[in-house]
Image 1: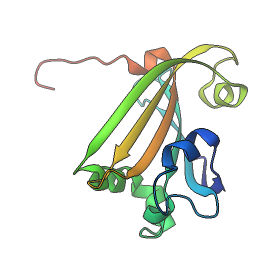
Image 2: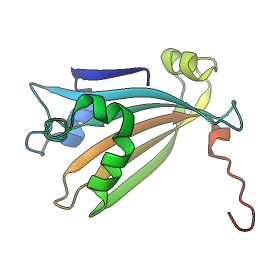
Image 3: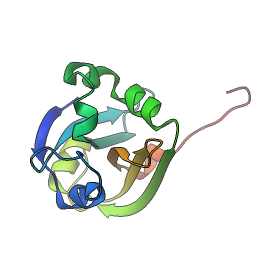
Length: 142
């Protein structure tokens, strides 16, 4: 975990939550920023910004969300599911610093949106990752 707290909702996030009651709190949204490094291959890195609506944060202790946010989001989204959109992206300076690559390097941006049963968005995760972060090896029995 790199950082968490309330921020002014970025336009791209504000747009996604626009029709959802109580998603923003005074124009702000709760953001978790973290870096993921594959324990088997340190070259596989991701930088993630996860945006959580105010109505969810009113139900969950912020300290708890720091340690178990994925379980909370997954449980909340179990009734409706999620969508994932992967696109090529150009690495920004800040993202490059966090995942150890130069600014301007082509990377991937995966936006994963989780929904609850009534169709509301419970989480928007923007994942910035190196191409090799998506390489997976599968073997029989695993």
